[in-house]
Image (cartoon, rainbow, N blue to C red; front, top):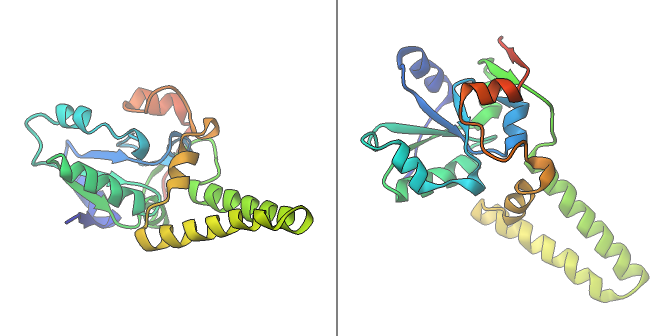
Length: 195
């Protein structure tokens, strides 16, 4: 069973704990757009359980905090991490709640969120297949039905395969490796907003 905490609790822990381990499982482009200063980027599709376990050698029982945009990808990452024997804790509401609460966010180049990219891709496929079905052959309506079935599956399971595919696209990549150090973050990002 996944453990979770609120962004307010995470901020309070950060004030009192020196070694708070936080990973951000969003895409590198989303991370570059805005992230928590003490987070390191480990995209969900590149989550290497062995590497993370090795990094935390001797600290497997200490909490490993996980954040994403809304909490959904964080839950998936926590499930995988817990299966590997780590004490994973999801941040409820993700970066949306952290930012809305006014906590510090390192800001960089803006990007289109992965959720918006999924909606755009599905909309394009449904519109295109509908037009093709109308103008060329009714066979094309099957593609729109397939996308609708995918949306239903995603809504029921809270898993979106299209999001994982889009997350690997070149426009969602910043560099060749995840951002893991403060120097990486500073090179990739340009400002910190404090409210």
